[in-house]
Image (cartoon, rainbow, N blue to C red):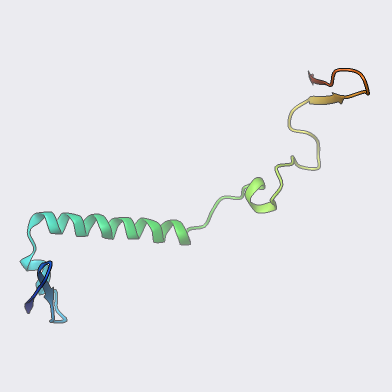
Length: 93
C-alpha cells in the first residue's frame, strides 16, 4: 500500500506493506536507479569479502624482494664529503 505525505519540500510517497507493491508503482527511471544502487552495493560487498591474491607489499608491509636474492641487479651509491658536491651514482648490472 502506498501512502503519501506532504511536507514543506513536496510530496513523499512510501510503502507501508511488507510485500513488494512499491516496485509495481515505480516508473522506469526509478527502477533503473534502484538497479544501479543494488548492483553497486553488491559489487562493494563482493570486493569486501572475496579472497585476495597474496601481495608481498600489502601482506608483509615491506617492498623488499625475497631473501633468495635481489629482484634487479642494480646499486645506488651516495657520496657526500665535506667541501665537495654530493653525488648519487646508480649502477645497473
